[in-house]
Length: 55
Image (cartoon, rainbow, N blue to C red):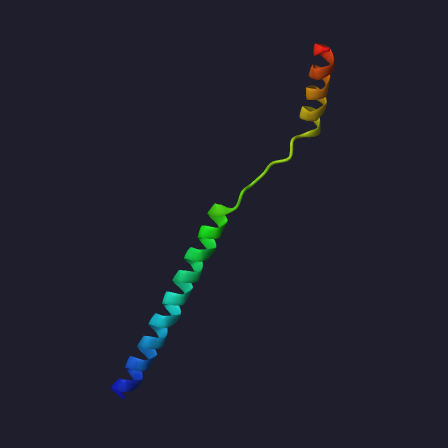
């Protein structure tokens, strides 16, 4: 009877450890991702206008 509790406890600890490890890996990959933002159309046209005014 006590052996069953030990087995269930060990399996539970294994599952918890796997969830924690996979969570850490996922978070690490998320922080390593290079985010980029597209410029707004207004910013692109204003930059073009500035370049034409300089010429």
